[in-house]
Length: 452
Image (tube, rainbow, N blue to C red; front, side):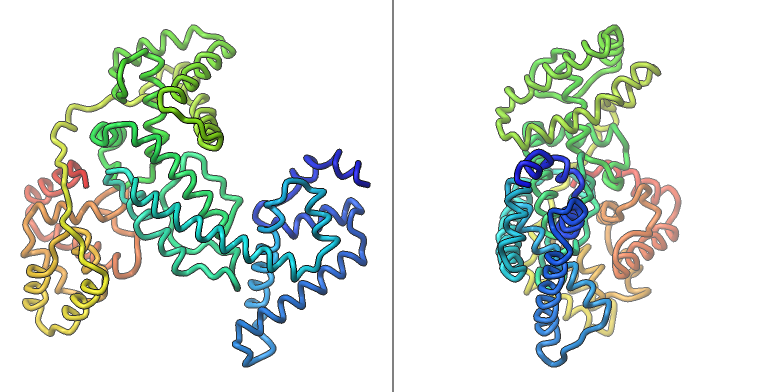
């Protein structure tokens, strides 16, 4: 039996679900007669005992029963916790031994330890990601790192819902494997975005913003992966043999690339790309095998697009040429944000005001950063017509800045965010429709050129 397990180790592993790991492992082991009926029934009985004990914690010992939906969620959480422990073992044989020779309560307890470690690791990763985040105005990127992922740690419940992925994560990774859930997904997400930030840190932030604006003038409001765009254009620059760490590729250079790459057979094309990628690893001193694998996976994703666009003479769909309009970009440095306790006190003071004039006075005197102003607008302390009155006293540039925080393909479409955020988005749209067209066009155009 040991030889059988060793021989089929990879086959069994490929049959397992990353999301429902323990359940799929039990199913595969049972269907292959590695676990018999009696062993499987014993495991299920033990898990039910863990469920009863956990449900008792859930009700704070006030009841011995919970709703069916709650019991099902707790059961999934238990399976997830045990699976987290077993995933960390190096072979199927070791996992089988653990299942056969230990109680489920022991495996569950060890799984809880694994989750606690992963939570702490992920919190440290988040600190690093926030510290080294890119200077970009892309809303999804900013919102995910500053608010969405921190929200996960506030709401995550490793005891009763370890398998659930809380928070709000909108920013797409270059390679996003969605078959993970819970803290495992967050941990993986943070590792990958850390890799992406590390790579992009080698480039001038103004060049990166130029690249994004040249890709789409509304790049702040669309879901794009910054790293993939940067890697693609730098790959093109390396293929051109350009000196220095630059991202711009001219139209003439794109024609040269088409002629150069279009003559290569598939095997030759793959070899050329492989050599360039190796040069990138050396140039940026990338030695981490996981980092290397992530870049290679992204390159593998990019390559078919390069080939296809060479064939149809649309290489501009792969490599981006900077647009001269980007010379008009406005780089905005925000003021210092308030401490949470101070901010909370101000919003409560605003909420208690009966007159909008008093609310405006508090905002003018106490709020000195765009981020705080946006948060005030979405904090349920300003209501209905008061938004319009506040917008009226802001200057055009301040209105342009606020438009940067309406995260959509079009600055005039407002169907995203919490209910409070949607309200001020709608009111800003209403205000813009009240002013003359020339002024509105100027505000929107200026907003598109702002880099936060």
